[in-house]
Length: 321
Ligand code: DGY
Image (tube, rainbow, N blue to C red; front, side, top):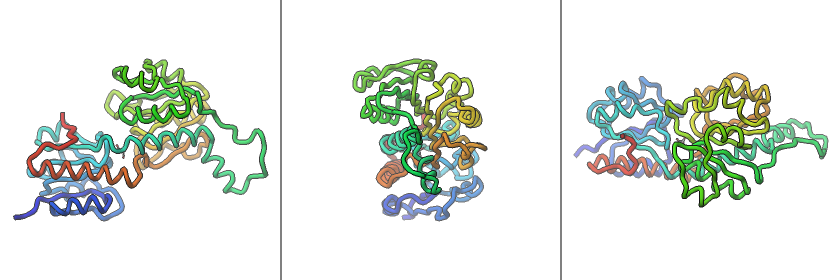
C-alpha cells in the first residue's frame, strides 16, 4: 500500500523526522532557508500532511495548490498567526500547534533579555571586547536593579505565567493584565490584576505575552510608550507586530523609556532602521524556544498530531475553531 506523504518545510531535529519516516513517505526542505510562497505551493501539491513553520503563510492559495487530499498542517510553533484558520476549516484541513512545551525556554529567554538589558550586558561585553576597558570605576555601566521591582505581564497565558513564576525568585511585585482575571494564579504567585493603563504606568519591566490577533496589533505604540516610566524596560518575545517598532525606535532614541529587549520583530527577518544602532536595546533573532529539548518536544507534538489525523483520529492540539 502506498504510504501517505508528508512534507516538512524546513529541517527539524532528525529524531522527529525518523519518527515520521516510520509511518509515511517524508520529504524535507533541505535548504537552509524558508520557502517562497510559489515553492511552498509546488512542494505541497499532493501531500497529505505538512509540518509548517511560523514563516510559512498557510492561506487559501497554498491550501488550494496542495489539493483536497491535504488533511493536516501541523505548525512547528505555538503561535499560529501564519494560518488562515477560516480557509483551512472551510477545506476540512486540520491545523495544529505545539502548546505547553516551549513555555520554559521562552520564559527563560524573556528573563535573559530582561536581565541583560537591566545590567547592560551586550553594551558592557562589546566595550570589553573593543579593548576600551581602563580598569574598575564606581560609576561605570550603572544598570537597573531587578529585585523587588514591578514586573508587568501583558497576557497571562502559559508563557506569561512562567515568566511571573520566575520573577518570584527576584522578589518582584507582579501585576498583569489579560482578557480575564485568574484569581487562582493571583493567589499562587501573589500577582495583581490591573488594567492596561495601570500596567503601563506602574511596570518597571513590562513583558508581552499576548497572541498576535487584530486586537493586539501595535498593542504598544507611541501613546503607550509615553505612558511608561522613563526607567522602564519593555520586553517582547511574543510576536513583532504587537509593538509598533518605528515608535519604539523613536522612544528609545529619545530615552522615553530606559531600554528594550526584543526576540521578535514586525517584519522578520528585517528590523526597523535605527534599532541596531542603539545601545539601550538588546536584540536576538527569534530564538526564545531554541533549545534542543524544546525543539524535540515541539516536533514530537507535530508528529503525533499527523499520525493521529492520518489514522482518522482527533489531533491533540487542534486550533481550528
Ligand atoms: C512559537 O512557537 O510561536 C515561537 O515563536 C517560535 O518557537
